[in-house]
Amino acid sequence: MATYSRENLLNTGSDPSTAESLCRYLLASPGLLVPPAYLVWEFKSAPAELRELCSLNGGDEDWLVVTAQRSDDPWYPSWIENLGVCALDEYVLDNAVIYVGSHA
Image (cartoon, rainbow, N blue to C red; front, side, top):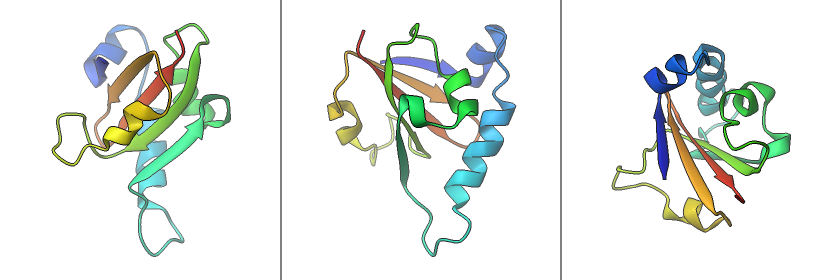
C-alpha cells in the first residue's frame, strides 16, 4: 500500500484543502442520525474534488473509500483490501483517510 501524507500531496502540487473540507462535511453527515463510518464510491462516481486529489494511477482507479481510520488503526476495516484491487493507495488528510483501489 502506498501512503501519501498531506505534505506529500502538497509537494506534488496538489492542494488537499478542498478535499479536506468535503471529507469533513461528508463524515459529519448532515441530516443523518449517525455519521457514516465509511463512504464508498465507484471512482468515476466519487466527488470531483476527491477524484482530482487521488488520481495518481493514470486512470486505472476503480473505487474510493473515505473514512477516519488509518490502516495502522486496530479498527481498520480490512474489507477495504478485498474490494478487488491490484494497487491500494492511502491518502492521509488532516481529518480523514481516503483509500483508492486501482486495477493496475
